[in-house]
Image (cartoon, rainbow, N blue to C red):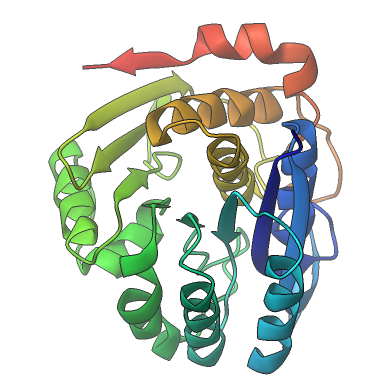
Length: 277
């Protein structure tokens, strides 16, 4: 059986994030990747130099073309840019019976450029989050969604619970933005009370461009193959750890992670991921 996933996201001309990262990750994890483009960015390791959104009708047409023809096991959203696009994506998914949805709430690029218009945050909360199987915010994104500052472990749990009140089935709070940490700890909380914390060694590197896209794409690929959310999150943590450890040293800025590293380093990556009570 060939498993299929779809990514609805922006293009990264530098290849480290967005549609490009998602499709590479799907491929590496044995899933056939399809896509609907929401915007084109002029982007490299030094930052985002331009954003050129696709009309909402064009995004809808791409999604319908895929969903009419493929048995899509999971859909991932990344950079959605505008309220119009978010609403169009939600309405399209609803018309196809609301396929399993993983949301990476892309808001700010690694270099600081805004990738989501302010009015789109309300649309994301209103139209899309209630449909999500799981959402994967980093700390800055979670602060926006939860409406609070996150500094402590208690804050992380509080923010996760606030996000769950917006309707998703589960939230993965990514720990890569915690200052001064010697490890990266991600927390999975589900609406039905399940809790899982996993930790990996902090890797001191500038090559972290596209880590959020890659992590959520790995979750999507695993869910498309029938794994539970918890199983998918653990596998994705191992995948992204390998991708960061085995850096490519490309570009003059925040370089991309290595999407094919997991094929060689999966055993080592599994050992580096620790479960926390």
